[in-house]
Amino acid sequence: MSTASVRSRDKRLASDPDYRERYLRQAREYAKRRRERMGIELRAKKFGITEDQLASLEAAHRGECAICGNGCKSGRRLAIDHDHETKKVRGLLCGNCNRGIGMFLDNPELMRRAAGYVESRR
Image (cartoon, rainbow, N blue to C red; front, side):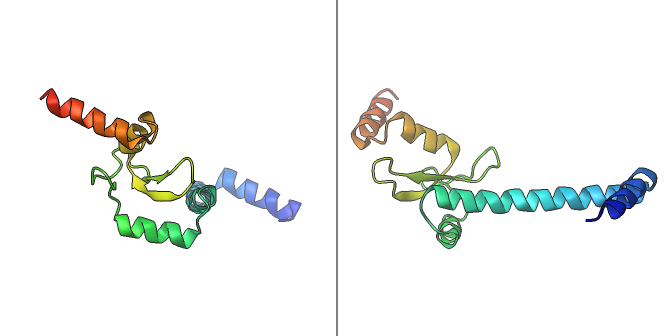
């Protein structure tokens, strides 16, 4: 964009409230789409899967946690659960279930013992 066209746009933004509102709305929408797009790209890359694999994983889960069956209460995307040793993706979890597994250090025996403890104290 040339300097003259930037100045012209800036003048119009300052003097025309309708133009300013339309311009800001479009800028916010563009920024939101870009954040969403980058979020998908970065999430997939972080876990060594393609964007298509992530999309099919999300479609298979239909927005539901693999453990509790609920969506994420915060409204965020489900977390990508993975084995910390092998880095293999296991599924999608809500934040609570994902943190719970992490607190038990991905140790199934420890999780079984915790479940037994809770069941025996009801």
